[in-house]
Length: 190
Image (cartoon, rainbow, N blue to C red):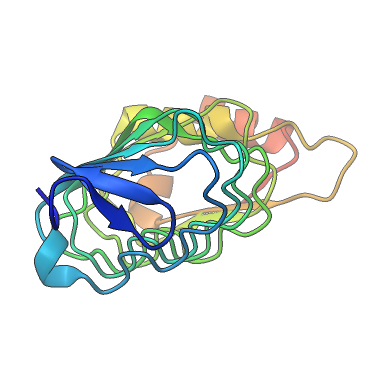
């Protein structure tokens, strides 16, 4: 359990038994747990978004917390700002699963996974990503996670070409078919 059972969060939610229940009217959860290293170390958390369609920012929400995993319940499709949301989770952060991350409204994903070096498992909603994103620090992505990332890329044919940045290690594992899919969607692979 984090904090007290059913404790109120300043950003608009409650925590009980490692479940973060986001209030249906919450708009910003920016920096909510930023640097809560000791309190969240090795925790597997559930972020329950069910019922919330107002949230627009989780900027820095789990910045330097050393969490182990996040299970997403509900949709993140309305969130615009994911900047640094999971950044600097060096040691234990391995998984984002559940309903996955939906980047349909995202306008900022800068640094979202920077220095989250152990991240291996990630689920992203198909065709939800239309802006450049970097996984340069994440050498441990599973083949399933790489497939999820590629399927999340929207077809940007006829539009500006966003960049998908992968670590050198992960990029070396891409098949010719995966590279062809990325480039056919008018994405630059870096």
